[in-house]
Length: 315
Image: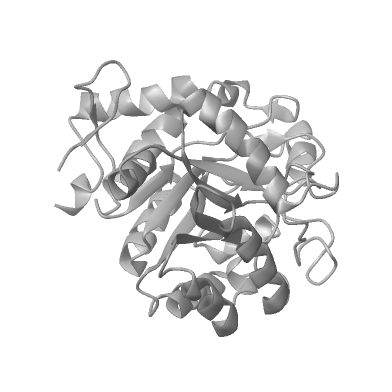
């Protein structure tokens, strides 16, 4: 199986199942994600588990601060649509609940948030980012109610399947919590589950990172986001880096790991991301991670040089 993307020309072959192509196949045109800040928090920040968060996460929690500035979800989406329409000519959109933990609230409150996002013109679905220890049957059932009319992705932050790593990064949950969360969503056939994984976590060997791919393949998740661990200013990881206790991956090492990882995932798994996209004002290291397009193209070129593709090690 081959996938095509216009990088160097119309006939360039893409060697993994790309998210944008998946959306285009579903809707017949470009679909653009718009990040929204719902004003929620995280049990790893509000004192339920801790107040320090994961070692790589700053106080913004990947957020924009839009809610704190008084912008409703609808206003955030409308503002995002303007940029997406101008840059991509997009007419259809996914609301991406990205900031902090977007199932960490009573169900009635969550329903109001999701309803507001999906009521916006042109929004054809949503992606809900959360922690695997912050879902239950009632919340899964709520998300499933939207799948009849909308595309819904539930994004679980796993980061690693190794409990020692999860403890080291102060994740606040173990791998079993992720297994339970995936099992909760499994009966909902139209509800898609995406797992976030980070390459380059402290103490993880290449074998451990590739074991994460095998585990995700066995669990049957619908999608994966692959992230690079980069150092953000003001985090615990920043302090570790400055003390010489952590060294980030070199660019080629990361590229090779991503290719190895993709080779171990089934072709049916949608790859939503293959590297991080740090905010330049917050980035400490590695500086090469700011060159997203370079890394993106290096992964493509490396797969070509190997004559490889997603799922190669499974055939």
